[in-house]
Amino acid sequence: MNIHEYQAKAVLKEFGVPVSNGRPVFKVEEAEQAAKELGGPLWVVKSQIHAGGRGKGKFKEASAGEKGGVRLAKSVDEVKQYVREMLGATLVTIQTGPAGKQVNRLYIEDGSDIDKEFYLSMLVDRETSRIAFVVSTEGGMNIEDVAHDTPEKIVTFSVDPATGIMGHHGRRVAKALGLKGDQAKQAESLVSKLYAAFVAKDMEMLEINPLILGKDGQLKALDAKVSFDGNALYRHPDIAELRDETEEDAKEIEASKYDLNYITLDGTIGCMVNGAGLAMATMDIIKLYGESPANFLDVGGGATKEKVTAAFKIITADPNVKGILINIFGGIMRCDVIAEGVIAAVKDVGLKVPLVVRLEGTNVDLGKKIIAESGLNVIPADDLDDAAQKIVKAVRG
Image (cartoon, rainbow, N blue to C red; front, side, top):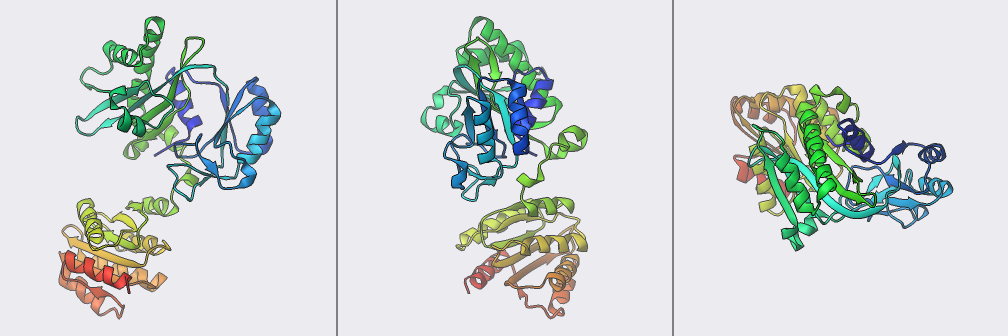
């Protein structure tokens, strides 16, 4: 689960991480009060969307101006002007895609007098099963560009969970960033606090870009991007309350209500599969034959008729879907349950696109019989290769 910058900073502040003072704004009328409470003389007005590259992004609406999604204001009137322009407008960044995202929240923050900008992030390293730090002197830039152009400027190391964070980890960060004396001590303290927050809140990723050194000699997190392990949210009701569903795909939200593993993609063939590995193989073979999947959907091993019906409805709700491939290997999942769910869904929402069904495993004959006797216009398939070729051919007319 992702959260907004202002929410991330509030979480980090609980652990003593230095951040600028700021106020979230949801309405134009709130802008003046927020700016006056902060005092100025410089304010930064930041678009709050779940995407990076906000400062370099551009709004679709001409009325929003051309200064991007992060703007420096030098007066209260300028703050109000930027809030009027940005709130409700659609911001397009390198991470949103051409559709962009509507800005429903802004964050007004004290301006900072910056001496240097650094990059610091933490994430779960799947290869070592440890929390890893990634640091660089090239703050304020896309870390992907730094990794491609000057990889020697990136320092990465992981923390042994048996020992937890230790002083030498902080000193390693300080050395990588060229910090000495009091600033090195600040880096050591910061690293300890970030690690504590990461572990305590079950984060998956924490990115500070930039981490700044102010002209007053103090380190500060000028930005914060945090995502959490969705499987651990039951332990953190305070974090779960920060969820902003307007930033998420409506189909993915609906799928989560039925405990379906669903991710929207940009292809034309909707997929319903049981098992993540089989789902990946199904998407791969669709690509092999020249088309692209419209989604990843794993209905799980113990899906019910109601769950399958919900999954089918979610797939057909996508206007980009030109055909559907159902690929079930019945182990725990019974083929007759899938068949009954598909028939129930088709009778409820109709079937306007080609549907190819490949069933194999437990109760496969019964499942095929149920579909064959349903009177639905379903294309049967013998195996995965056959199914993929048939759905691609059907989509192409």
